Every structure is written in C-alpha cells, then in structure tokens.
Figure (cartoon, rainbow, N blue to C red):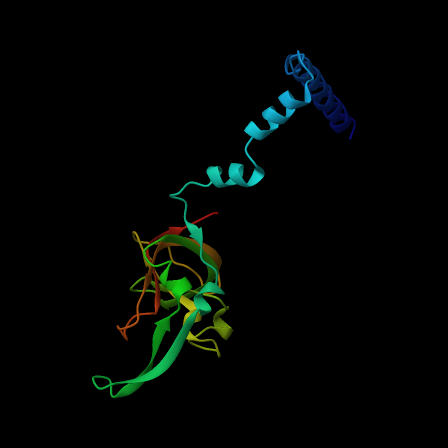
Length: 187
C-alpha cells in the first residue's frame, strides 16, 4: 500500500510539473488592441462547431444505416410460378433507395444461415425473435457478403459491419438488403 502511495505521489508531481511548463510555454501573446471590432472580426473567422465536425467527417466515411431506415419498405404477395409459391415482393421507399450503392455500417445480431458457405445475416433482433424464427419481417435482416473469408461467427454476437449497401427486389433466393464486400467495423 505504501508503495502504491509513493507511486501515485511521483505521478502527481510529474503531472504538476508538466502542467506548469505547458501553462508558461502556451501563454497567449499579449493583445495589442482591445478594439471590439477586431474581436468580432476574429470570432467570425472561426468555424462553427457544426462546420468543424462536418469537415472532420470524410466524404469517404461510411454512413450509419439504422434499422428504422430499413422499415421504409412495403411488401405485397407475388406468385412465383417457378416455385409454385407466393413471396413478399418489396417496394423500397425513397430514403432506402437513396442509400443504394453507398458505403454504410450497421450494428446487429449475427444469425448464421449456413456455416459451410459462410452465409451470415445481421439481424435487428436476436435469434429467438429474428425473421427466420420469430415474428419479424424481412426488413429486419441484412445479408452479409464478406470481402474475404471470415472467422466463424456465433449466433447472437452483436457486431457492426460496413460495406456497400445493395437492394434486391427481384431475386427470391436472396435477401432484400445486402451488404456487399463487408468487413467488421468499429465506428
């Protein structure tokens, strides 16, 4: 315990000395004029907080895709002769269409569909409530198409993935939402 107290005292002394050195070396230069017009002119040259954060975000940075955004879709029953069955054909809303082809990221629960084929989806809900097992709709899952071979993911791991967002309204063998060339992501 004494050793810990001595260590803490040494660290505090180092921080104090560093703070004193910074405060003297970073002191502002004296202002030659205190004219209000000069101060106002200086303030208008500073960027706003919004401008600062907007410029910090790169145009190439992926956008967050939310599960709420993915609910901008309507489904109607369409008969597919080849399958002799009906399926839900999506009609995507404008907000979802606007995201097609963009790099996005989304967070959800992993649902392994086929381990051998590396076929996974990310779901808004855990396995017990997901589209395949519970009462959720097809808008609550996104097909993950990985850029390269992936590790084995466990059911209900909560992770974030980024990739190119694609829509599928016609191929009954694929999900409606696809994240192409995806990788794990840490926003």
